[in-house]
Image 1 (tube, rainbow, N blue to C red):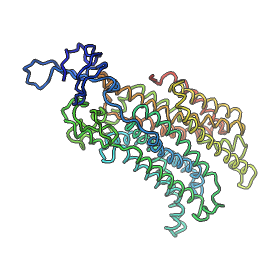
Image 2: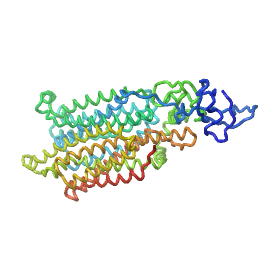
Image 3: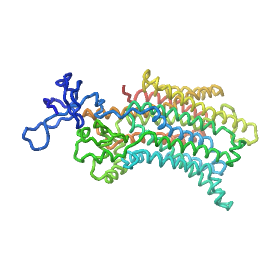
Image 4: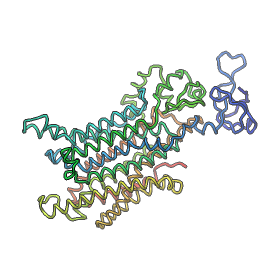
Length: 576
């Protein structure tokens, strides 16, 4: 270890040892002479030669090139195949979402669900998600399972999705096989179907946060951006395939006759796709247990000493052993705060500490959440009523006419064309996600965010003022731009914010995260989707009844999106 004179201010670049070759101890090993700029790694208080306190006046210096300006070595670069495998969860999730969008209304009608219960079915899941999502996000931040922090939650929620689909697509058949009393059958069929819909929506909404946090844990900042683009790409492909399979008349095909009904056919495809996609996803990138890092760190050790504490440290989020002393400080601070891991987890997971962590979010995180809420409110307002808008306004059909009347058949035709419009939306969302990587260097995240809101606002306003079949289908491509934007840009910004916080903490001037982890921040962002569902489900029905036309929904979506343009341009924080 080479001695240097004390620096007047810790953390400043040291000019004495640059550009001359230096012998510097890095992470417990001496790499030999190296050349480059060096930053002060640790500055203990000065002590005299005879001081028995155990502290030293020596300073440890570390290369900024090796540090990556983050205080830790970079995670390994993930191959494209691993990121594609990781994105398969989004493919399976969106495929099942598309099947639900195509079949849940016919299923609910077929079991005789009263209209008075419709609002409860659609609002119960987002309300539960909005209340519990941060709890699950914080729990995954402190999970000490041997399989990792995120994957146990992803597996559990995936099983819940599969169970929910089985209940709402096969509820009537299950009850018919188990209950012989004709008077009890409808009640049980309605109950099982409702529980299945709520369970599926709850799990499918919840699972997005752990999937994003899993990606952030195991990837470098650059790979996070690549991974989010692949997520959006496969989200669009999964939705498009789901809508295409839902548009096929399975009742007149051999598979439909073999399995019984089209509901059973769609359950067969959905369960197969979901199971395969989640197996591939869970095996994509290994994840280390939280205790792998925490158990090797003495409780009294200061955060500044962590990078050079031991050769046995593990990377944050990966089971690959680190050979240069790397350790992620967020993981260590969560795992090494207390000598009793169970006590620490229990303390962290109280509602009081959770609310305190949410309140401690920096203002730019809250602004990002508000912009996400605005975007999803506009997007859902249009998408949930789009097929009805096509049937009533574009095709001038009547959903309340007799089922053999011309008006009702015209309405059904409009709904079918509306489904093709949703398919166009999914396909273009996937295509646009691919080109986003080329657009980011040109217009940046701010340009992508602003352009997504602006194009969606102008497109929905145009079809609301000038409803036409062909122009509406063309404008569905702009819905795909908005969909891709909502799935990528906000989470890219979360990754940028965390990247910046790690840089500041490594240089000694960063703020304390007060117990917040990437899982909690992703969950808070995903909560805005549930809140948007609550606002849309609770408010737009009343708005349509008051105005007497679904045109007001499209105009409202346009207005909210244009307001979002102003918000993302003025209040959301961007970094170069």
